[in-house]
Amino acid sequence: MKAIVITKKGGPEVLKIKEVEQPIPVRNQVLIRVIAAGVNRSDVLSRSSKSYGEEVQDEVPGLEVSGEIEALGPDVKRWKKGDKVCALVAGGGYAAFKAVDERLCLPVPEGFSFEEAAALPETVFTVWYNIFRTSGFKAGENFLVHGGTSGIGVTAIQMVVAMGGNAYATAGTAEKCRVCVELGAILAINYKEEDFVKLLKPVGIDVILDMTGGDNTLKNLEILNTDGRLVYINAMNGARSEIDIVQVMSKRLQITGSMLKPRDNDFKAGLAEDIERIIWPLVTNGKIKPVIYRVFPLADAADAHRLMEGSSHIGKIILKIEDGI
Ligand SMILES: NC(=O)c1ccc[n+]([C@@H]2O[C@H](COP(=O)([O-])OP(=O)(O)OC[C@H]3O[C@@H](n4cnc5c(N)ncnc54)[C@H](OP(=O)(O)O)[C@@H]3O)[C@@H](O)[C@H]2O)c1
Image (tube, rainbow, N blue to C red; front, side, top):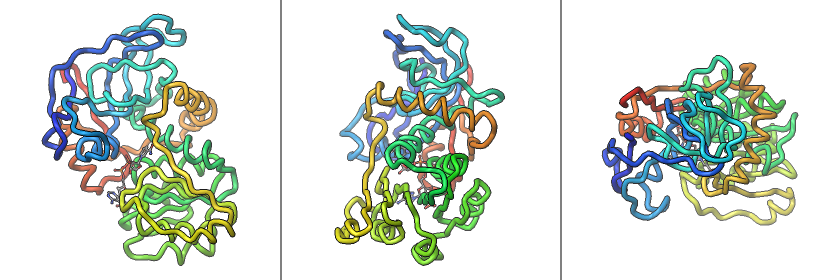
């Protein structure tokens, strides 16, 4: 089958389309004929950064796919050939076929295109895991996401609002801030022009989802309410920060973080169950919508990565796999 592979660590040009072996679904796996695949920042980091794994050769990136079930491995209970699904995968999504644990598939919501369905799994699972499961976010609480128009940000704002929370965001341009508000944020702050601490300290934030780290760490601790939770999913602006432990103690703050990709399938299947029960109805009724910035043919994955690295996008970048690629 055709797939995009990371031929070695480097710039977008190391992504090449190649003929690779088609996976065979084993016990409890379905084989998906992939029609669309989401692009995530993690794919860019896997391609370019040694801290995301040592030198690789011909690794297929991609953490989320949508498509039709082509074949079933032994003991598959839920799905049948031809079912339309989207799925969370731990690599291998930029390919014509992907074998995946049947528990990590969700039905393509009624009326959704495959591109829209592929825009959901990675961000919905990550947001559910970190904000709702780990931090125990509750209706009525105040929530802040940095990178409000990242793929993660657009999902986080909508999920929090749909679950009865008050969303705030930071983003790097006025247009990005406008979109955050359109998605339901009460206030979105262009951090390049305004001080989010000044604006959000009087509000008081209960849960922060942070992918930036760096200089924002102390600022985050300052705006958190008593019993506030700070959840890291990356540290794009620096992994090391000095904190005031007394501030953490006096406000009883919780600082935590996680990585979804290395978690095992049993753990992810637990997330999938909650998501299908609680979040999927909100997706189906339009309260949570995929936000797609641009769709590229699979063969142009390098251009999709260039766009993501430029950070001008708002929402998700998707790869479309046509017949014969
Ligand atoms: N731990 C996990 O399990 C997990 C799972 C999924 C995603 N993530 C992380 O969540 C983040 C968002 O992922 P995504 O796929 O949604 O990314 P994305 O769409 O590419 O968005 C990233 C956004 O972050 C902002 N940003 C702030 N500092 C940046 C920097 N130093 N370099 C580049 N961008 C910077 C940019 O927006 P502005 O212009 O507004 O600054 C950019 O648009 C990534 O860091 C990713 O690694 C982690």
